[in-house]
Image (cartoon, rainbow, N blue to C red; front, side):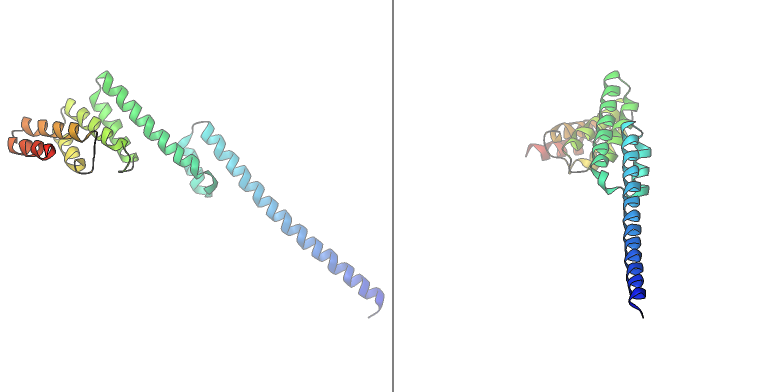
Length: 180
């Protein structure tokens, strides 16, 4: 092989390496651009308050960078359900309030301090909308999971339900158990 042929072979190899490096960098930049566009689109959906679309979009493209927004959204949704429940309760729409509190209860974590308040308000709404048996079931389900400050109120409400249903022994036992 002549030196001139070696030179062209080396030159061709260098250009091939440069081309492959450029191609790799292009693909990397392109994928980063696509990812950035998806993140921007997710932010747009969030800013436009299209939360259901935002969650679907986030799950579809696995945008882990935006998990903090998802958690923020869950807190917002819970607060919104709670506020709407309280509002309906104050307006005397107990059945509608109970529906909002049920949805809030399904969104909240069991160890959240607000769980006790939501359980109490849900039960009170159910009692006021003549769904006493449903309130009784909710209270019995949560009575041992809830600590102060709503424990006393929940126990008193459940005892009242027991009394109204003629279960005086259960009501008395429940109240004695709390006073200990």
